Length: 497
Image (tube, rainbow, N blue to C red; front, side):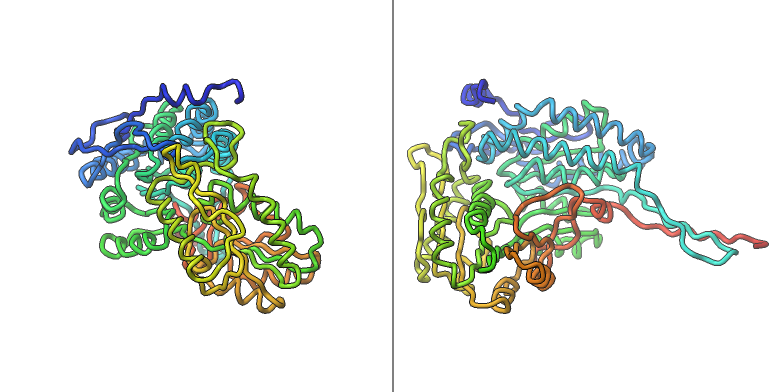
């Protein structure tokens, strides 16, 4: 990676922001566009189609035709597997191009776009390709005069709406199981980071995916996204984004055809450190690395750090020592570990939360300032707040930026109460050398994933999702097939048995 001149490649970059429908780039119906602005320096990368209802109609029609004529859904699982594996190979072969698009479009460091996001997207497509011909149907236990078959069938046309923080990974989490199961997909990427989604569609067709099976329609959420969620010929919506918009997805389903809605929403994850855990330095390194990765723009970021009062001063000092490692840098520099927030609006949002924390009496151990202002981009210094109460705005609401809050507790019961006192329930972490305590607290936490003495260790084999207002349904693992398939019972009577 060090031999690549990423700045020159970024300067030479030209983008095609047109939608991808029926296997090719097409002009949007209305011809309207919006600026694609790089968060690195505020420059305009090019124009992206501002698609609307008409473009969504075209994409859904293409997807429906592809599904009904069986060009994909009727292929044997082994054939779908072969094509999806080729798709994954194409992703890996285009890793430099995709990583550059991801970095200039949403601001993450090039080393992580190249080393994390691209291989994770390919791994997801590979995993579901390999899984699809190993998922068996069922035979129900009936009497001798009947045979009851329970089979999974593809749902039909899936609308996928994904966020801007991990554009490729979030898209692959929807595409992998939806396509492997035989569905057709219409993907609406965030208007803040649409570039890799459009390129993925081209790579999929190059790999042999039939035309119309995978379509991408860029545009604003309140226009293209709403049109997709309201469409009467879309069978399900897989949405990842804010809880606020997740509520709208459920409303849109009620206003249209009662389509299935699977929401993966926000989080305010608790990271609980007990005094019996001896390696506090490792815990501090772990939470800092997880919190400031991707500029804090992660739904599972451990933004509420809960520390026993007896070790809180020591732990806060260890945390403050970590902050210099995560000072924002040029995302195109391979040495940079924290990049730019996605746009000026997100920058203002994060700075607003920082101001709120200070106004409510929290103390900034570090950061609390905008960074790299001279670049023209959107950067915030890693920020750690001490003296935070669980009722403060910075402890209640998802910030989606590099802002960590440290809260203190006095005993195990209080730690559990504070951790569960949230409208979210995505992830949590327990740090204890006591086996009983680790299991006891993990069971008590209302979260979709509980990490013990680590954070963010993960794999495609385990489900991802949350309790409460963090959403419903699960991405990843075999459980994701539940979102994109229908269960059918076929009951046969056997005469003479």
